[in-house]
Image (cartoon, rainbow, N blue to C red; front, side, top):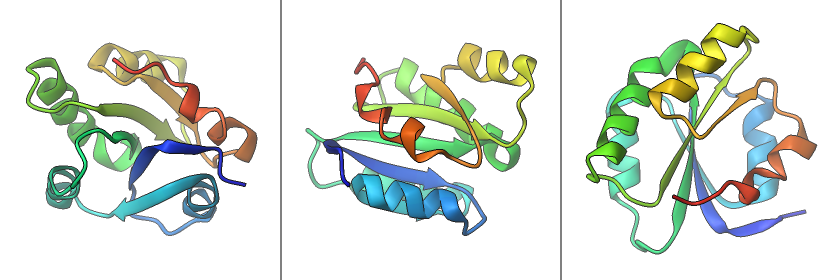
Length: 125
């Protein structure tokens, strides 16, 4: 069941796993990006500026992407982007580091459908 048409999702991860399946069953449009250079291309190629993008970043592999995206948001080079960190690592210090870097939320992997269905409740900045 799809719960949100307000968001597109860009999922930054190198693995093809059940997380992708859950995202695609929940959101109207999900793009999976597997390398750092394609993240910005994917975000910038959006046709409709009125669509907010949930940017789910596997920080085990792509923490520098989170840092760059959050910096671009801070300087208003990117708008309508909501960065969310995700990881299999449940370390509280890692979670705090991600939030301090600028992530709006932190989600443990593997995703649980009940958690993903609440992602549309994320407050827009």
